[in-house]
Length: 74
Image (cartoon, rainbow, N blue to C red; front, side, top):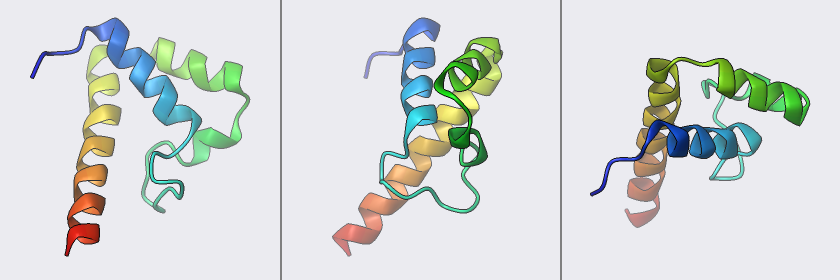
């Protein structure tokens, strides 16, 4: 699988900041509270994150999606 550039990771993180991919964010979702902010504030938050923080947001959601897919297949 091709690695995403930081620019593309930020774009992906902005999508995650906008809405939960599963429709209902879990109580421990790190972005849950931020989704109540204005879109401008949410996107600025992502723009202000360092590389590690962006990677952590994506990694959390990747793991969450994998768990949800596994649950639905069983």
